[in-house]
Length: 220
Image (cartoon, rainbow, N blue to C red; front, side, top):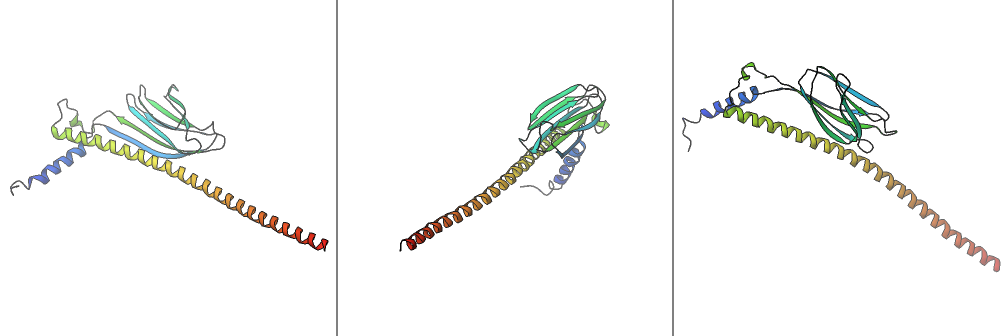
């Protein structure tokens, strides 16, 4: 049993844990995610200015259109190609900058002549400096701080998993809607075909009886 003297300590511990988790952010992370339309025979590029020594990550996935593939390449401020892939449905790329300047991420649908694509893009980069100056110490983390770091990493994993599931759901929904349209038109075509065949059979049977009646009248 818990004694009454120990009960007031629980809110204080939870408050300290919450404040520590809010303050214990070792890196300042900047991220952006969005979807965009990529028409056929077209190319779109996105630009980001980064300092030297910054690690950035890129993740993309084609949600709809054609064979769900796209060309992608990344260049540094001197137009050196850091990443170049052809007809990929999805991929991830990470790199640590070696110079300050504008980095470019481009997506190309120039190989497609009639289908446009919908692409999801996530771009994140980390500034490798503490959020608080007091956290630049070289001593080991306390047990509370280690727990907060673990919780933070687990939350990042959960967020990434939710993003993947959301993209998969969007892609499956597009496929299901496309299949629904095809099945609907196929059903309409079959209905029209059955109607035409039914009318043709009725007309053919009527012609048989009409010819027979005329031939009987001629013989009499």
